[in-house]
Length: 316
Image 1 (cartoon, rainbow, N blue to C red):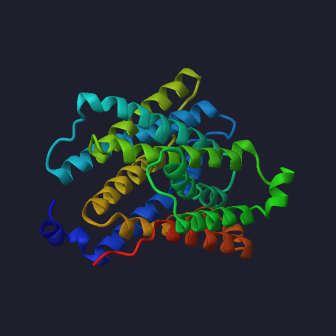
Image 2: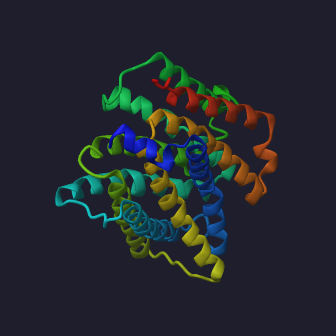
Image 3: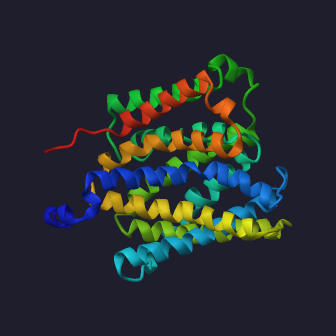
C-alpha cells in the first residue's frame, strides 16, 4: 500500500489512532477482572483446573470466530488460510493460546487482578529479549536494554525487592509464578507472529490459532472431567465479552499497525497494565492494593519501560 493510500485512511488520523489504541488497551486490561468475575458467575473453584480449561477454551473458540468475521468484514473478503499456513497456525496456537492461557487462567484463580496485570506486563520485556538474543529478529540496543531493566525493576519492586523474592514468601507457582509463565509464552508467540506474518495475514493467523487453541483447551478440560454450566444470562454475557476482548483488540490493533508506523502504535501499549490495575480496583474491589505507593511506583516503572522499549523517533 502506498503512502498516498495510507494518508487517505481514517486510521492514520492521530486522534483516531490514539483513541483506538487506548480502547484496545482497555479491552486487554479488562481481561483479568473479566476472568475473575467469570470464575464467580460460572462457580468454578480455584482447584477445578479442568473446568478452567473448558472456560478458556470456550472463550478462545468464540474469539477465533469473531476475529475471522471482523477481519473478513474489514478486508471485504473471506479470510481463509492457505494450506501451507496451517503449520504456522498450529505452532502459534501452542504458544499464544494453549500455553499462555493455560497459565493465565491458572494464575487468576490464585492471585489478585492487580498482581496479575503488573506481572503480565513482563511479557513486554521478555519479548524484545527473545527477539534479540534467541530469535535474532532485532539488533541489541542500549535503549531497549534500559527499558527492559526499568520494567523488570518495577515488577521486582512490586514484590518488595530481591530479598523478598529470594525468600520465597510472596510468590507461589500457581499464582504469580503462573503469570510469569504466561508472559513467557506471550513473548515467544510475539516473535512467532513476526516470523510467520511474512507468509500469512496476521489476522488470519490470530483468528484461526485462537479457534484451534481454544478447541484443544476445551476438549482437554472436558476429557479431564471439567464442567461448564451456564447458571444465568450473566454467564453468556461474560463469555461473549471475554471473546470480544481478544477478537476486538487484536483486530483493531492489527488495523492500526497496517496503516501506521509500528513504533507510533506500540508505544501506547503502556496503557495496558495501567488499565488492568485500574479496572481490577474498580470491578474487583482491589483499590487498596492497586493504589498503594508501592503499586503506583511499580506501575510507573513498568509503563515507562514499555514506552522506552517501543519508542522510536519518527522519520519525517
